[in-house]
Amino acid sequence: TRYFEARIDGQIVWLSSGNHGHGYDHIFQPKGEIQTFAEMTNSKKNSISHRAQAFHAFRTSCLEEHIP
Image 1 (cartoon, rainbow, N blue to C red):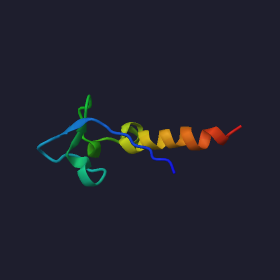
Image 2: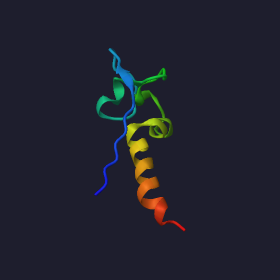
Image 3: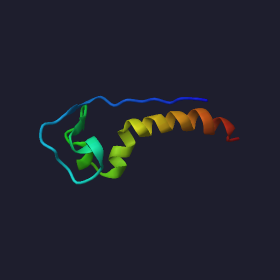
Image 4: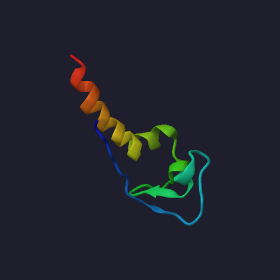
């Protein structure tokens, strides 16, 4: 069993903003960004999200070691 964790720093913004995403996406603004996750395109959000980071670590550790 392997576990993969990641995190993204940011802040909770007072006014909910954006039409994309779910959960906290409308109120979470990643550090260094001017948009909430819900305001970003899916490709932008997925390139920086904690889930994307954890999946990259999984892919590197578990999948790429088996590719010739």
